[in-house]
Image (cartoon, rainbow, N blue to C red; front, side):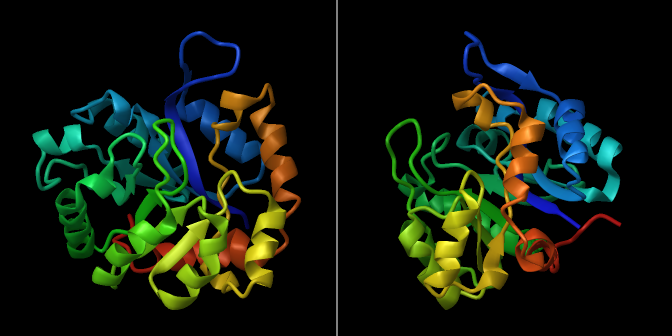
Length: 253
């Protein structure tokens, strides 16, 4: 069984194209299916313009229609969305977690908003995926900046996506029982370095970040994902940790 903790649908820049390309639910699900991915967490990049969330809701419904309980929808929250739904009361009940990206909304500059979201996640027993690492605005978004929030909300499970900076991963996953990292857009050798440095393997999630690869390279996403998966043999990383990350969430029946 193969589980992917970091997948996107929606519009995304593509190398060689003047305008962003739409990666539809059908297209993304087809890529995952051909690569033998059995379960996945996904969010929509359309958050950057879909401020009332209606397009993202329709996309999520379509992914769930295609994949059923194998698809786990995380709602990508923006500060613009929060202006319309302050307490996230309008979200459909098929969402199972939240996605936050400092490149779209600088959450570290708005700690009160971030704490509000995490309080809601705690109430709903939602896990939270947070992008770490550099973004287009030059912000570093390091793991270490989010750890105080992880400490304040110990019942919330965090996926500090991408595990950036890499050197911070072992301490983060070893000292915080609610912290996971995914290896989206990381080579398998990086994960081995984390483990060799003492990181708990049971806190590492496989993630592909599909379709970001086509932003930089002219590649087949299916072939890319198949090649990437060949570098991972650990049942914990490929499956068991994913189930543990979602275990306490209010999952759809």
